[in-house]
Amino acid sequence: MAGETLALIIGIAVVAIALVAGLLTTGRRRPPSVQGRSTDVISPSKAAPPAADTAVAEVPAATVEAPPAPALERPESTASRLVRLRQRLASSQGALGRGLLGLLSRDKLDEDTWESIEDVLLTADLGVAPTQQVVTNLRTRLRVEGGAKSGERPDVRAVLREELIALVDPGLDRRLAVTGDGNPGVLLVVGVNGAGKTTTVGKIARILVAEDRSVVLGAADTFRAAAVDQLATWGERVGVEVVRGGEGTDPASVAFDAVKSAVDRGIDTVIVDTAGRLQNKAGLMDELGKVKRVIEKQAPVTEVLLVLDATTGQNGLVQAKVFSEVVDVTGVVLTKLDGSAKGGIVVAVQQQLGVPVKLVGLGEGPDDLAPFDAAAFVDALLG
View 1 (cartoon, rainbow, N blue to C red):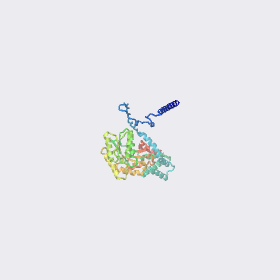
View 2: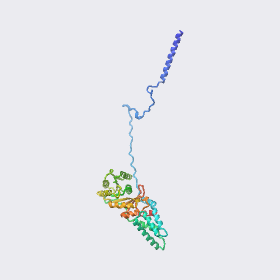
View 3: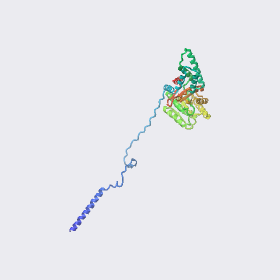
View 4: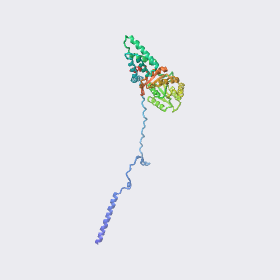
């Protein structure tokens, strides 16, 4: 009896332990849906699409606004350009004037002094004939005016100023022919490689825009894609249309289309940029003549501007003579004049070609091109 009771107690205890163990195991078991998996962040791109019958809120499309048109630049007026002309020339050319005034102010003007004056003028690229002319005039005036005033020294600076202004020739007509007789004015811009023609075309356009003229640019330098793009940029900045063709297009056809566009629309002025040509390449020079002839089937060319680098000195005169034989140059643009102390090139090129310097480049800024003024130029030389 006692043995049966003990066996019953042991059996009950075993069942109880088994039940407790089962309950504990069940409490620690993870739900089947997450057993054996780490936490996963679901990105929107991996999200399951909504069921067909699920309503999806409509999101309004974003409004795309066109970028504002770039503000057009307002170029400087001619008056402010002339102020800067005097400042820039005074800083770069003043050494020439100071050298001459220092020599002419000596107590005794002997032959050695006059030879030194000649050297200064020749070094400034004035040329032999103009140098001899100004020295002769100075010697005569200083001797005569000094003697007429009972030994008083004449005003050397005033005498030198008058002689230099006369040499530069203030009587030349330096106006740009930017209008035609019932047609647009047509400016053909020519010159050798590296003289700055494309930049000059863009800067002339700015001068005309400042005068409230309408302008079309012809990108006839079709051999250089960079030149066409550069001209387009100049036009965009002031709201001027640029007529262009593909790379390698016949330059004459581009020039023709530019002038035709201006004629059809009543534009005031067309400025045609041409390829930089070496003056000893007969084929290229002949092509330049062709460009001019083709343009004149639409309207007369009113101005042929030769762009010269002022730092090239006497070599620029050789270039000038060849170009004038091909296209009848009517005016000269001298670039980089602010970086050279050789201002005498102004006189030399005018005497060689018999045409005036009409514009001078004074720096790299977009408005650093100014009409040439003889008196302002000489005053800047003298400081």
